Length: 43
Image (cartoon, rainbow, N blue to C red; front, side, top):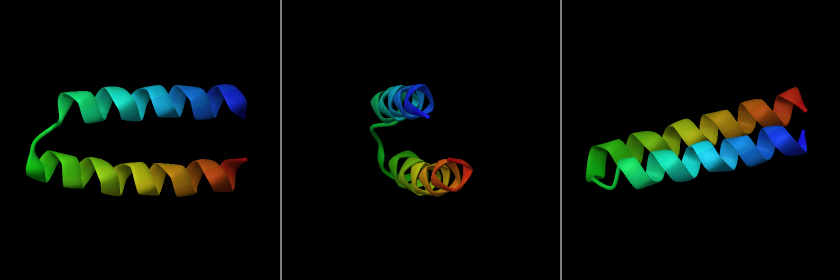
């Protein structure tokens, strides 16, 4: 669980670093919300 969360945070940080422009950032935030909900269900 903890390692999954840390890898998820690392992935989100990397994605946010790469996509600093508008539509990509919006898509990234929606994707991160969905992934967070899915990981919460999985745990």
